Length: 220
Image 1: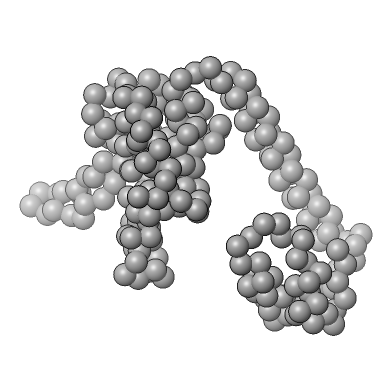
Image 2: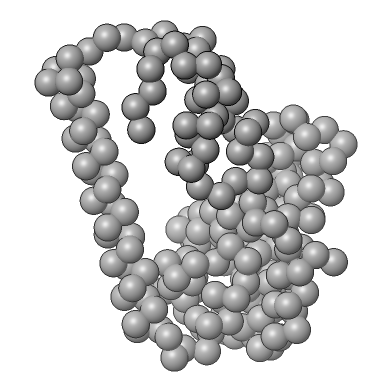
């Protein structure tokens, strides 16, 4: 799509309508893009210049990473399609093939954790209080254990809260309701979602609780 420099906002929205795909508020999104571009500073560069060459290099690397991700997803589906735990994890909101594979690879059989608190501690999602002599510090996540697993659960939670209807999004929205733009409150809400994701993953594998997956996937 090629757009002229003097295109009006309405003309831009009409021309770009099919480019952005299926969005809930396409008019507002395209309007924001137009206003941002209109007020930004453009630097004229040659199509054959070093800046464009570097940009193409970065884009090529990104595309290569996407191809690798797609290959890993296919491998995960091929290797684990008959694995009951993998299939249970895949039904939880936000968990894709690579995330399910990572949980199983990093945690092993989640049934070995007799209580979800043990699994939270394994993930570094339990609370710890810094102490020195008589000083008692702030209580925060311990972060002493599996960082890869904790990061995976954090990313899964961010995906889940962006999906339309599930209990993770509901919990997040309730948590930030009193101040939606408070960065510290949003961080704490995401931490709570991460811990909830760990508890749900442990519960559905340990008990095979199909009804719990349905509850997490639907708005309660």
